[in-house]
Image (cartoon, rainbow, N blue to C red):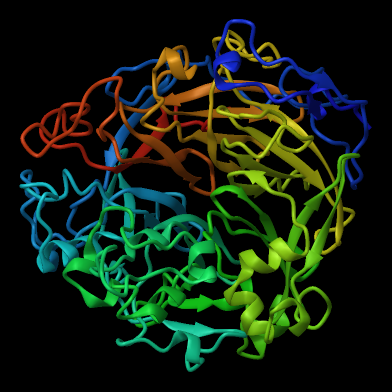
Length: 624
């Protein structure tokens, strides 16, 4: 097996942010080399030597980092815009209004805001005709309404709810261009769509009883797809939609319970202010409504009459990913909890998935949820979150398995899970079987798995299991992100420096696509160590050789997130989220000046999230 690079584990003392961003950079001691278990040799981290017999997958010239307000792709490729926020689902639907004056009722018939995780479902195996399913994570309240967010109204809250969720739309390639199709499959799932619950926490459970019927999915971030053809959407920062009108200086002010506090629920929320006009989101008035969020939601894109189902066996966290793997017939789902200091999880079905489907049962309802515990020697274990054994028993403050799943974070705390620097998207290579996870950035280190402290650039962790249902694994730091001008340990160059890895997908050829989410507060700023990196981007990596190249650079203020291709690999879909949000590098976006940072994709007028379609000019496979 190939040896790991010296970046397998970094150790060393804590450094201050000022020291880290000084030209001297972070200094850490390299760990001893170690090997990974598995049925195939481990791939080679960028900067390491090529693995014996490793194939060269990448055939494009890297694009330069930049700060232009456009999408840049390699020479020989063309990008076009498809389904930006506000696109009508049907040709007879309400048109997008450039002043953002579309109503809530109209938004329900249009593509949502802030595109994120995505999957292309081919129709009859076609690479020119299929169904695109994509998430809508949140919305920029400044550009979502003509007058911004200084005043909140019931109509604005309703429009915000309608902009969230999922879009399902049939598309086809005609004369070299992708377009939407008027179809019975086209629909929106929003913050008010009726939903059901299944698994260990049933809909009738007392903790799910609120002052309204179960409805909606919010803050839909990463995604996954099952072998039986359904789509999984992940509810991430759902806590920020709740607040209360009870003032802090009230005679009996509202205080969060320990469980609410552990999930970050506060009196103010994230600034949406829905709780001021809709009691559904007033945590003091309707506390159990919050319990209905934080789940992985299953959707059947081919059945427009079906309801979304929240699969409670997968736990209640801020779900970022749902990487689904068929493990010799059983289902494994890898998941991250996107917050600094949170954990990585794995769900393993009890039965072969086909047996459950044949019996009209869900493979996602009966299984075991595990949380990862990393050891300093490069090994790790998946610790079961199962009620009945200390500390997950009554002596540890848990009532039953429902309690464990409702309080997944607290259960993970009790069993000593390893805190990580924002565990986000996870993807398993269909070629090597290795699993990779993005740790975007954070302050959990320094320790072996969180290799820097602070860690403003993030890294990618790789782990290998004897089989995907195993309860042990071996791991290493596959790729350390950053700029060598600020961090001597970073082994990247002008063709591939990047920071804050977030989105991640390994395609059928084995190419790893890495998407970044540099905070708007850091984009292009020297005092944050991001001046040479510029806008958010997407890179391609050949894990077998360590070849890493920048493939795409997004417009100003955006995040690049969500990627998939047609079965033949000749069309790639990439989502551009929240272009034009306020950032110190370019200015403050306001209702009077919505284009202060960006006017993408229209070139004028307020910025809009959109899906970008990328094709090779010669019609070949993307990236090859």
